[in-house]
Length: 165
View 1 (cartoon, one colour):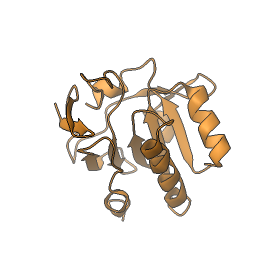
View 2: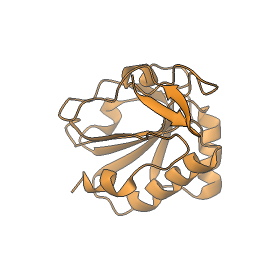
View 3: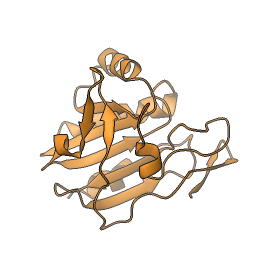
């Protein structure tokens, strides 16, 4: 489990991020049409998973905006925002913000948080997802991970994007 903080207070996750060099686990996430999206839907593309607790918080919104801004210039790459938010909330936010270079998917009825070690196991944020980034190449091999140590801070965008070069 990862030891992280929320405004300095200890928080724990159910596990650890996938190891560099391993293959992404299969996942099922839900889109705005309440349809499942899986690994197969992103086959052959490089993937940046921008994982966060809730789109309706300042830092989560900032990370969605920043990755959307950067994603427009990335070839053969998809940025996938993942949270426990309902698909409708994710879609509302992205539509209102004009975020059209990211795919926002929900883990509200799935096991992504458990499978990727990012579900928070305690604190008032229990059962939400921690702030993390996972980058995989076009073959699904994990090439970068970051478990952000303080939930209230943004991820290292530069390091995640540089992993794709």
